[in-house]
Each structure stands twice: as structure tokens, then as C-alpha cells.
Length: 197
Image 1 (cartoon, rainbow, N blue to C red):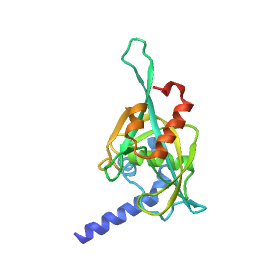
Image 2: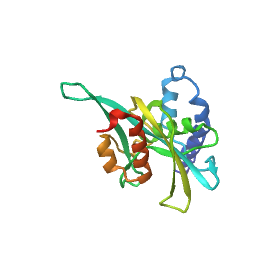
Image 3: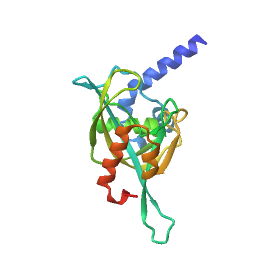
């Protein structure tokens, strides 16, 4: 049993090491088995985290899509994707630490794929917001990107730990428990006039 634990621990570390290189390879070039393994490996640890003037830098996305209305006018309605918090208490948008070996945009897309299992096109950066971690005294500076979802994955690294749900803007305002994330949502809504509902 100890050998299995050692093997799995080293496999995770090895995949975390390979991940930055493998994500640069076009997915069509990778064998399906490797593509699946890479998509199931989530980064962990804080040794690569970026800090600036005492703030931990955090980035994420507000995943959204346009859903056709059931009404005859066929007006498109904006929906956003929320995920459950790791502790299961409340819903939020995917976010996490911005690491030294990636751009801010790459980090936001990576966190969104790891936590929510969606891939898409990012819009203009929103923020910053400052807040204190609920678990420690660390201050965070956070940025969010609107992400127009192009693909929803069936398997993603945090699938077993997270629930994901498409909701309207009004529902997101109610279920998102982080004030700064609700403010990010409002900023995104201002940039998307059709999202006023």
C-alpha cells in the first residue's frame, strides 16, 4: 500500500511538472490517453504563486453562454456558470492563484478548466478587487475575465469535488457568496448590455 501511495504521489508531481509543456502542444497532436491524463491533472501547492506588495495574486473567469429563449422572439439570454465551493458551502466562479510560469490570462483559463471543466475565449480583464482570505490573514488581489464557453468537458480535474450549474444573472447574484465576485459579475454585466435581465 505504501508503494502505491508513493507511486501516485510521484505520478501527480510528474504530471504537474509536464503540464506547462503539454498544454502548449495542440491537442490534436497528442494521443488520446495523454490528453486525458493531462486534462485530469490539477496543479497543487503554492510554491509557484505570485505575490505583489504583500497580496497573493488570484485570477479566474466568469464563464458565460448565450441561451436561446423559449419565447417566439428568440431573444438570446446570458447565463453564467457557477461552481460549488471546495467546502460545499455556497457557489462561486472558478478562480485560483496566478503562478510564475504563466500569464494572467493562461492562469485564469487553467483555473477555469480545472475547477469548472469548461474551455472558451476570454474577454477583457476585470478588476482588481482586494479581499482577505477566510482561512488565513493573507490579502488577495484578484482579477476576473469573462469567458465565452466553447466547450464543456465531461471529465476535468475537480469534477469529483465540484458541482457546476448554469444560472441566469439574477440567480448568480443570489447564489454567489463572495461580495467581490458579485461586483465582478456586475462589471461584466455593464460590458454586456444584453445581460441586464
